[in-house]
Amino acid sequence: MKKTIIILTLIILILLVATGCNNIDLDNISEDTFNTSYIDTTEYKVTRVVDGDTLVVKINDEETKVRLIGIDTPESVHSDESKNCSFGKTVSDYTKKLLSDESVTLEYDVEQYDTYGRLLAYVYLDDNMINYDLVLNGYAVAKEYPPNVKYADKFTEAQIEAEKSKSGMWSDNVSNSECNLKDQYFINY
Image (cartoon, rainbow, N blue to C red; front, side, top):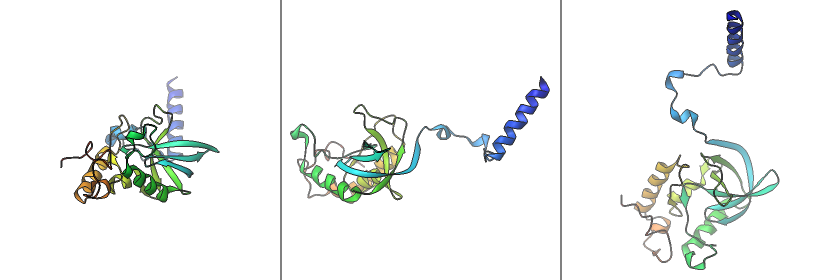
């Protein structure tokens, strides 16, 4: 019996080494090692941009709504017209110009779908994370949606930078009435 266990252990070790799993440093494993987020390196064609933070991509020949996580953009197509604002249209147009007919890759966090059935993702165009880009340019605010908070600190830093440089919604030319998020999410840095 002991001989069988030793042989099985050796076989497992040989398989691990053969498959490239021989560089595991067990002393330096952090809790991030077991994070469930991952980047899907498949490129997906953007078929439509719904608004500033929602788009539709083609996955396995099906159109799938994708919600950019960790951010929120001003409303532009909300069913309650009173929630829409003029800067929301500006953001939607920016996102359309950036992503229409492009191919993107997706990175997922802990939860993959929201209560509306939308796929939740950090969206990349080449090496540029669109979620971050929108916040840094003042087109979105950093907004935490636990448990999907992998980049929450980075988004908050980007928003502070956008506020300091008066980019996008943080410009003196955009009033609170033109942007329904400006006053609510201002970070007092």
